[in-house]
Image 1: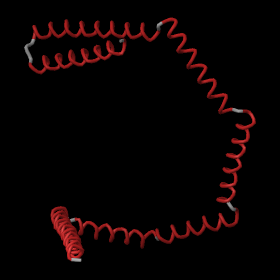
Image 2: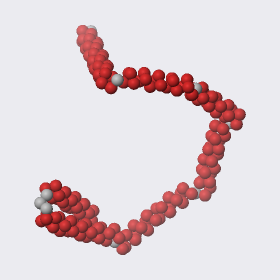
Image 3: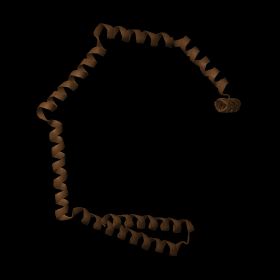
Image 4: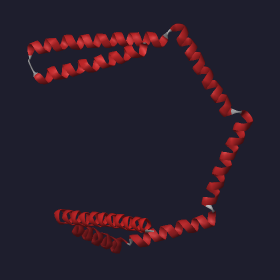
Length: 188
């Protein structure tokens, strides 16, 4: 029995700690809100906005017009059953599409066609090594670009000794090296 009471007291203490934390958080939030309000005049601006909205409503009768539009839309829907007809049309279209698909096996045929195209593309690639050759060509292009950038940067460095440009060129070299390394890894 004493351990049960001790557990109850511990649970109550934990609950009180949690409530104290929530209270402290709420106080800190209120304090921050007050600081922001004082800094940016939020409550004054809110009052001004509400006043302006009320003024515009009195001048243009916005609430009445919105209410009238809603009533008109409801009345039109009641007379012409637009929502029900739209829902029925959508349901019928979905059912017809489903029935057509079941009858003509459109989804199944599309899956088989896509699968056949994938298999044929894979066979063609295996036979003619398209991906491998494209990878080699891309690697060669990257080497060429890297060489051009390197040659270009050497010429610029000779003309102007600028740290910023040298760092940019070095960054480009590193990026090209990374791309080239990834291409090499993909070829393996």
